Image (cartoon, rainbow, N blue to C red; front, side, top):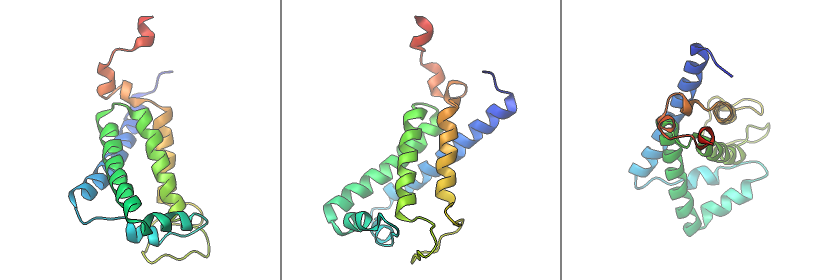
Length: 158
């Protein structure tokens, strides 16, 4: 199926802005040695609160969680920006965002220490970004604009 230049441009911009968001968030965490997700995890709410508190209260698990979180953000963002391995990065990004959503669900009656902008009844910015990544997963713009375009397609050679 062919898409108009406007549609392709919109999909590409969506991929790039989400890529930049992930990349920047990951790099800030990697470049800040004192960064930890402990306070965020302790502020969790909803049915998954015990799981996130367990991570926060176990120093070894927290250290692994912090390292994996920061590097996952950076690598997912880099993948989106470069346009290579976008589909696996999209799946990983959706999984990561789902964990963020489950740790701080915007449900009535749950109050958090840290203010959250863009959080409304059931829907918040995390869920919106997760949905946008789903669009990126379904429309592979990396074959049009991205490093994946430079990799020969095995399906076409057969």
